Image (cartoon, rainbow, N blue to C red; front, top):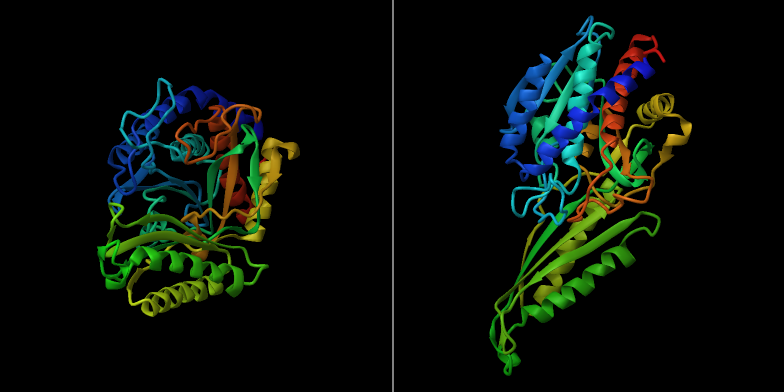
Length: 402
């Protein structure tokens, strides 16, 4: 089976490249993936795969039933949204939508899942159970498309035994994959603070409450959350990436706005840390006569890969790619809304290499010149297919075949 899937994935590669380039040229922001969803639906129509679209407006969920479809279910997920980045690549397939780019590889993820759908549809008479394909909107934006799809019932009817998702990884060459069981990616909470002071003339500070000076104290004071409140053995990052206030040299403004993010792996500490952020900010502002308006919407939880599910998926990848092509992944302070799925069911979020021998296409995701070595599309489609088939076979107590 491995050789057959590899051959099929290789045969599909020219078409996959075309799909990916089409998606790359037409990126859409989170929860606005209307053309992307329509494209996915049209490709599923060509394959004769039944689906439901319009879930949470732009989500698409398809089912590939095999023999005894009610026996078990395995879910595969791909995200579809792009980022508000102006692309700087000079390729024939560069983004045609100003200020929007597939700089995180979601065009790759969607293409790989469509490729896997084509392969799995051909194998539907050879596996027992059902494979659920989840084309998800809004991974890049709170509250995360995964959380909304779960509320809409994506993990029901049928309920998956496990879910798998992949992500591009330019640190590894195309043809490889990376895995990590247990904790893998951090939680992510967005922090919005408005400090309200009393504006006035810069030469008369005694008549004002300077929110810029207070903001500086708040930023400095909040670093104590990491340096003195957190366990040094528990990785934590608190970063403020935006300060907005004032407009000229001789005027103290009325307000300053801060925007930042908290990242950690420990969910109990996460809640505690957010409490400290609220408390310290309010107290510092009050001490200097300012008022703090604090908004911390629910963010993404930390991503936990079920150890046994991940160990099994890694073994399948080793069979499919060879031991030398399967790598260990390190903890990442980046976040992923795939974590919402793994809070509910067993799951494995893994990476596929996308650089060209580690020498080209090595720029990180979220970079305006991010691109991939396109043979990685065949690796992703083939590997997703083989993992799904092998996982169902393991549930049935058989082997997917090598």
